[in-house]
Length: 171
Ligand SMILES: [Zn+2]
Ligand SMILES: [Zn+2]
Image (cartoon, rainbow, N blue to C red; front, side, top):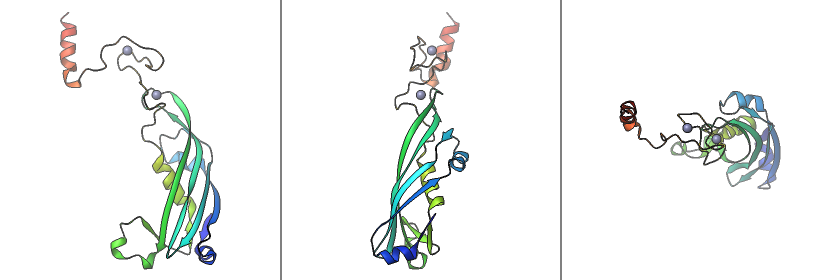
């Protein structure tokens, strides 16, 4: 779905509401941490203000992850806000090239590719089932969220690990 610039020009600042569903299969294929995904429901508004064009709104979906620490599969509802500003490419000054303002390359704003990028950028590279997930014990492999273990290795400085082995062997 695209937003026609002429439509925004005609509305003179009055926002134009849009709804769009992003294809989950394509998004899943582009991010290795996404193990499953519902269609991404997107709601937003587009408007022209002054010489600039704006879009904003949010994207919602249920995402299946595997916790990077304890390897437990979990599902999370994500609500990702987005907001972008555009200006006609020819009106962007050279020194604005690095700014947050995106150049308008045609007479339409192509929503899907833009929103896909926004969505993927917000997906964590290290998803965690809980912020304080205790993870698996590196020695016995137990899930420390479910059951404590008595391994003493957790706080050993890796530089001292060799020393700990030395003392263990000499017992
Ligand atoms: Zn976890
Ligand atoms: Zn353990």
